[in-house]
Each structure stands twice: as structure tokens, then as C-alpha cells.
Image 1: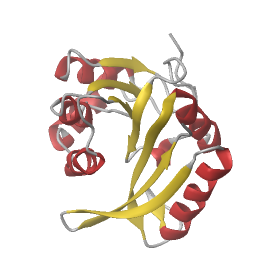
Image 2 (image 1 turned 90 degrees about the vertical axis):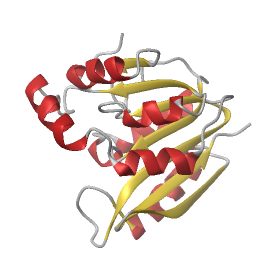
Image 3 (image 1 turned 45 degrees about the vertical axis):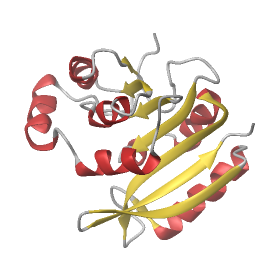
Image 4 (image 1 turned 90 degrees about the horizontal axis):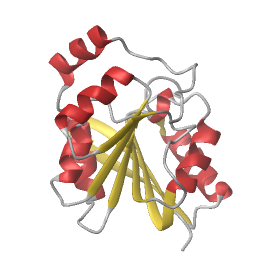
Length: 190
């Protein structure tokens, strides 16, 4: 089993419990999974799966689901919530799954926590099956810093996916209630 990257914040059990009281079912996770639309033929990976809300939603579509989170306490919560999911401690920079495993890889509101985005993007491409899809969903920022992506940052990320070998990439808006998100997607080569 891969050891999580030391630079990644590891949440204590108490902090995870407190987070679960206020954010058990983030609307962004539900809306993002609905937008991604995984189905019964998909093997779905949630990077930074947290409490497992996206895993639960993707599982309801019939997709096989797996998750990765740097916090062992989050992993335990996600496993408890979605017992049939394969959830492991890890990070985007060191995804503890074999090459070509997933048809869908999603990072919902967690990309801004990655310590080494280039390494994480290379890892997502490694675990994507041929033709697999990557979705990075982040809150739309008006400035170039904060927890999310600015328009410029999303465009740069889309271009980076092409540089790293994705066959295609795009940036699309996503509304979650009054909040605005950006979805940067890529497709692995066939």
C-alpha cells in the first residue's frame, strides 16, 4: 500500500467528524457526479474522496467505485458509507492502483490541495484506461488564488492535460446552486 505524501494535510478523526457534521453531502459532489454521468460500464475513481458522497452517488448509477484520500480517518468514513467501494489512503501524486484501471477519474474540490499538480496529472493519466475520462471540478475563482481555479488557471490546466498526453481537453462551467464551478476534463488516448 502506498504511503500518503508527507506534505499533504492529514485530518484527525475529530476534524473529520466535525467536517462530517457540516459537509456530509456537498452539493458540489452530487452535481459533479450527475454531470459526469458515470454508468454501469464505468470504473469510477474519486481522488480526495473525503466522506464518500461522490462515491455513493456514482455507485447508485451502477458504476464500480474506488476512492483515494490522504486522511486515514476520511478513508475509514468513506468505507463505512460505501462498503463495496475500494477506498485506499493515498494522494493524487501516488495513486495506489495499477495502470489503465479506471474509465472515469474525478477530483471534486480537491485539486487545489495537490502538492505537486504535474505529478498528480501524470498519475491520473497512468490510471486512466485507454479512452478514460478525467474531470477536475473546482470552484470558479474571480482572482488567481484561493481554493479553486480562475478562468486563466482552468485554461492553463486544460493546456497542461494536452501537453501530458491527453487526446482532448476542455473547460466547462458548472452551476451548483448559486455557486459557480469550472470542470476541466481530459480524455486519455485510445
